[in-house]
Length: 509
Image (cartoon, rainbow, N blue to C red):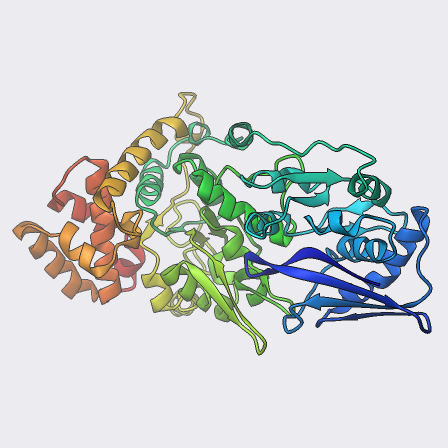
């Protein structure tokens, strides 16, 4: 008896079809799984056997061979439990095998036959609409995220018995439907606002510039000056995500298993803040079974690295590729995976080991050599990739006690969205979406300087010893400042403001 059931597996953030072939023949009882299964897939035989028996169906006491095709790609995870069980039931005549071939299946089985949620339902659903199936059957908890995909019918089921009745036509189950517009509205609200932040107007201005052009930013200041508080409010002034961006971000969170069950679509820009003890695989991605890292979870959002210089140096240096390319490539002997990682980097650090260099209330106990050694933990090439360096001084009591409400995030976002609209019109027809991503040809075309600007750039470049990368990033930031001022030409004042956002270059010169 032979039966074939369709399922899916993940490779990167995309999915590919996996045909689960079940062959049951006479012979000594045996349950063999082939097709490069990992440990979790091999253990499926015990879960499947118990689930079938405890659901009231007879498990065949024969030789069972299950092949997961294509057999040359390693399969991992527990999502093959459900298609294996359906294949066995189809091979033994319990369910209609012709009907089972019309669907793709994904789900983990518990020993009592309940269908449990799995990771990666959204990428599989996005791919399954091109597989020529009538629909996709998922666990009830995963059905809303699968139903986001247009052009595919998704059914959510809770147990194996319910699935058998559905496949045999004995039970009618309505497809899962979701309202994408409603999901966007649910996730668009923020629980923090810039109106709650007193003082630090120059830092807010730098964050506005960073949000307007998609620039990376580094804040330097003593403990308690508000660096983390300001960083957490950056997503509130970023432009709203489009549906395609939300789908890409949700795919990554679905793969890792971080998608909230109450909201099947991540419609607000993610804010990721990993601890400084994180490993390179945790930040960039990888592992024995490669998984996306924090840089990918921050895709289309903000990656905040607090206490930047406490991170291991080799971990920080791995940020170079995603900051430059917007993606991460993980190479293994068997395969090479690429994960998207287009994020804004916001980092915070103390000015010295004790944290009080330049603080008027506390005396610094660090020697110049200690300060220099401390700052060397941040390499020049990585520092060059951070467009804005801003000093965050301690806030005074007068500013703290000010009862007047500061400018709200919604008011700042209006200016940010206006600047982004100017950039969309400027880069129409190209892959570039913001000033920070400008290519050299676009830089020459849109960042031309007048005579006064040329003289200023020549002076500061020779005096501070800017690298070529720093020079181009200064032009990009100046272009963003000009966009915020609604100026077509970059003026000397725009360039001067961009130069003042390179505080670490000035101090270390």
